[in-house]
Length: 227
Image (cartoon, rainbow, N blue to C red; front, side, top):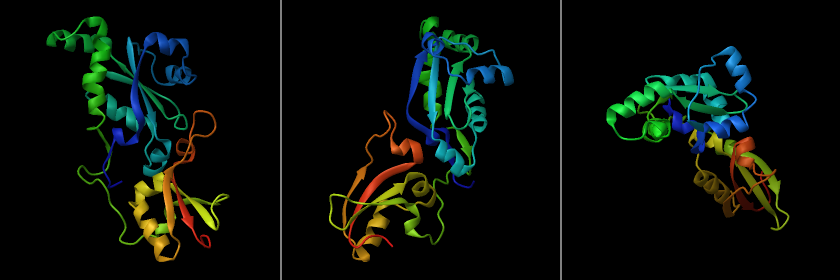
């Protein structure tokens, strides 16, 4: 890939820090295979949990091992990662190394060293660690690209006469650089006025359509319907 992709670009939501007790009470099933196949020497008082955007991984041909390797490089941490479809990475500070660094700085109690290290060193580094691409190239787009390709699905409105919902694909928008404004312009030029743009509401419990199929928003288009 030519476009520069950093670790933070692949992380969904806000990184979360949990204690070892919390992890042990509900240990993920994929810890077992990781221990058997990769390593079993990870232990820490505090663990950083990352939720990875799986759609982005497929779009940019990146795997979980790629991300973990970059995070572990030059950092005193071990990344315990799930299979790709789960999209989870748990970051364990190497307690001995972290405690030595914290002690040298004389900043904090050793018992809290791993938590402070995650907040002060690891989380800020996510915005700087490059996974792939050329540093400095944030976006690269084709000279021409069909605007309609960012439409994931079309649904007829039950409340608006001759209205349609155009469901947009967030991953495709990121890859092509085609923004919502381009689609609105296309619709209005074709005589299909746009009523509104809104985020998709939650479905299937606490999940959302955005997290399931990479859809970012719904655009209401009034007219004869898409063709």
